[in-house]
Image (cartoon, rainbow, N blue to C red; front, side):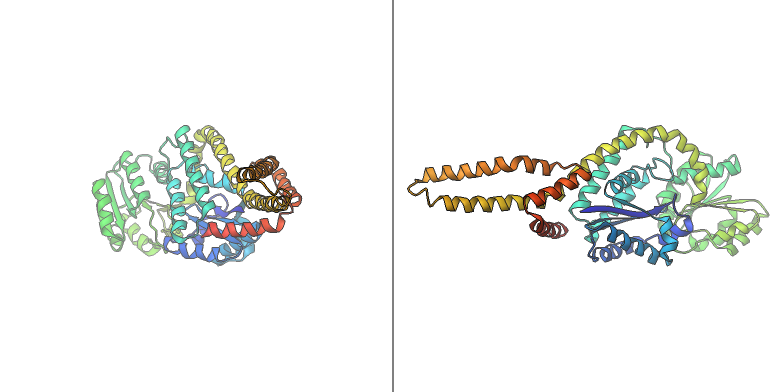
Amino acid sequence: MRICHVGLNHKTAPVELRERLAVPEQDIAGILQSQIAQPAIREASLLSTCNRVEMTVVTHDPDAAIALIHEWFADKAQMSLDQVCPHLYSHTTNDAVKHLYAVASGLDSLVLGEPQIFGQVKASYEQALSAGTAGHILHRLYQSTFAAAKRARSETAIGKQSVNISSCAVELAKRIFDDLTGKTVMLIGAGEMAELAARHLRGNGCSNILVANRTLTRAQNLAIEFEGHALTLDQLPDYLDAADIIISSTGANTYVLLPDVVQQAMEKRGGSPMFLVDIAVPRDIDPRIGDIAGAYVYDIDDLQQVVQGNRENREKESKQARELLAQEEKAFLLWLKSLESVPLIRTIQQQVESMRQDELTKAQRYLKGLDKTQTEAVERLSKALMKRFLHPSLRTLKSLPDDMEGDLLMGAARKLFDAEIKAVENQKESDEHTSG
């Protein structure tokens, strides 16, 4: 069995493509179940965030599995393979594990070390469990991933600074306005990103906070916490002109802010500039709004310039974190490699046991007259000889190196013990048991 990891992120694909591929939570189970219905894919999970869409699968045929996932990406984006594939990365086993560990630890994030991604990776695993597409191998992989990420965050300073997408959006606003004191802010959306933004804004002097959300109750809860004012999305046109800064982070599949509404608000503002930051994927703010005089629109990819300054301060901690992750990766890969030898070991043991019993049956013709104690002694002797004969070979198979040498030793063992066919059959049985 091999692990494959295929996806794209903020480094390989623009927001225009990422928003085409963003997957609503309610669609994930169906997508995963359709993937494991393919003969080449045994287990599957899917991670979809504002900065990445990635699928992790367990397969006996990496080439076939990767090709199937590439097709899914192309179909989801409604683009050709030639258009999508240049933006995709595909990792197998060692590299796949390394990448997932880095993602969960925040080392592959737009904001290096940001903490939110850990919860998003955990949610992707739980979704796979609910969909029935995470089996024995993915379960072990994710438990190992979570342990590794926790070590990276607790044993290094990678996550000690409170830096995230929301704080970077506020930092960008400070560059535009210099001083945020007295500015009126409108948060569109009332989720975690909006709450984080509100904390940073209040810390930078913003006392007037408006919270607009599809559900008024959620908007009210956030507004009360920050002494702001709550409104529904339908009320946006009535309040938009009051906002100097707009930060939007909803889960909508269509634009929440359109040019005509902003144009009317800008006319009411009499030319006073409006700063709009869209940290949602799919995007909330129609990019055409940027053509309106005085309206300055930024999306999540525009935060790169802000992030770079924070990244330079964290690279030293990143190196130390990767060294810790490498230790956890090695342990997991050794376990994964051992799974490949389990069916072969079982086959060898069964074959040698069968030979032992055959030879013991033949020998009993010449050992007539033995009492029960003597018969049991012969039985113990034959078993002891069998175990002693097998021990060096089985010990080697249980601790195979995860490289070409390990593959060569597996092949040699199959030939020497004439175990090829039975090992394959046992592997199929093991896979079916695991997936069940």
